[in-house]
Length: 322
Image (cartoon, rainbow, N blue to C red; front, side, top):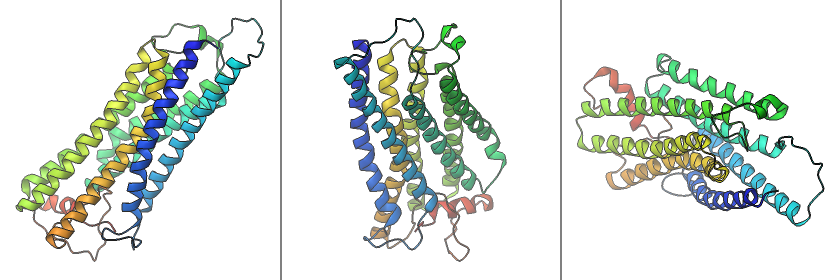
């Protein structure tokens, strides 16, 4: 094995371990707000199983990828210290099942995060199917690219290795991954903009200064977390057009933890804000933790919007998810 390739593996594993630690810190804090009440350590009467399950799946995928990365580094280091004779052929190196699983995990994580983003958009637009048509096309395209990527890695058609490509094909199916990440960027940009625009339109109609501040905070959280997710997705797309294997390895290593962190940060920050509002204002103007669940029929929420079409949206954003 070339020394440069081993150095790249070591660097990506080291950086990935650091980001895994950062991600796990947000994961456990996220569990605190998903499982326990705002004012103590008693279990919530109503747990959002959708968000809890998604958080657990993202964590499992991240830990799996880092474990496989560490296993690959140890195997490569062992092969260098104890070289195994190989036949003198010029055939392209074949990807292992570890590589197939790691690539698939990264794609599934992005698809899961995008599906939750579409779910939030669907709820905040009063379960309108029209708003989901455009992002759903790209989401289904992402699934198709994921399946095609796995098939490519399993079959490894020799023609793909020998043909000309404009993207890096040394460590993975870049030709398939580039449209996947491009579709993720478009989907993320569309749904995030749609959600932020909806909240902004409601904020203009709200009379209460406190409610305006809360909606402004929700917008800021979405913009900041969405920008972080969008940045790593764009980086993952651009890096495949470079000849640097090190850059691809490092960006791939931090991609999955950052996706998980953006998901956790939204829940953490809005839940902390909600708890602070309840404590300081005696439960007036409770802010949503962006799970965007429809309030139960017996939940009473004050209506402070002037437009009847925005009333449900304001109620949903103001509803407490317990």
